[in-house]
Length: 287
Image (cartoon, one colour):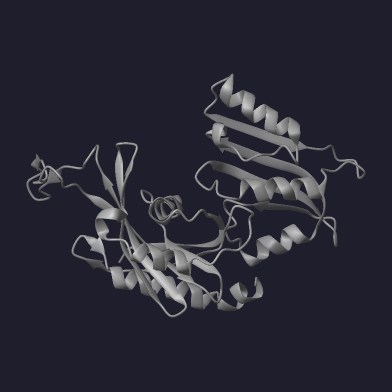
C-alpha cells in the first residue's frame, strides 16, 4: 500500500488572524458543480468535486485536471503505447482530500505533488470570494527552539517569483525595495538572500524585525518560499539552534489502499482524521 503524508495548516485572514473555514466550506457546497470548476492558465482545471460539513467538521475533495501533457495509454504486458480514449471535454485528474476541524482550528490536507495546498485557498476564493491564506503548522520542537532563541544571527531566504513578494516596507524597507527592483528591473525569477551577523556577542539581528519578516513570509506564500530558516543562540545553554520553516513542519503519514487506480477516498479521509487525533494534545495547546 502507498504511504501518504498529511500536512497541517493554520487558516488566516488578511490580517494574519485565525479564520473559521467551516462557513466557507458550507457556502462552497451551495454552488452547483459546474460553478466549482475554474481554469488555471490554460494548463489545468481545478474542480471542487465535494464540499461537505457535518457538525464541527468540514471536508472535501479537489481535483486538478490536466489540459496539456496528458499521459498516454501503456500496455504493461506488451509495452505497446497509445492514446487514452478521452472525449473532447475529458481529461485526467489528480485528487487532494482536505479536512477542517473547527474546535482545534486546523486544516489537514493529503499531500499531492500535483495538487498543492494553495489550490484550496485559490479555489475557495474563486467560488465564494472568501479571502484567506494557509500557513503551515510547525512541529512542537521547532516552536520550542525558536522561543528559546535569545540571539538571532542568521536568516536564510529563497523566494521563487519575487514579483509577488509580501510588503516588507514596515519591517525592512531596503529588503522591500531590493525585491521590487529584482523583479521589475532585473526580471529575476528567484532571489536568494542571507542576512547574518558576525560572532561577537553584541552583534545580533533584531528579533522583532525577524519575527515580522517571518510572519509576512509564512502568510500565504507557501508555493513561492523555497528556503526559510533562522539560526540563533539558545538562551539556556548558548547552543546554536536552527529552525527550518520548510523541513520542520508538522507532518503525519500512513498507508492507504488503492481503489482501482486511485487512492481510496474514504481511507484518505480516515487518515486525515487519524492525523488530527494523533496530534490532538499538541494542537489543543496551540489554541
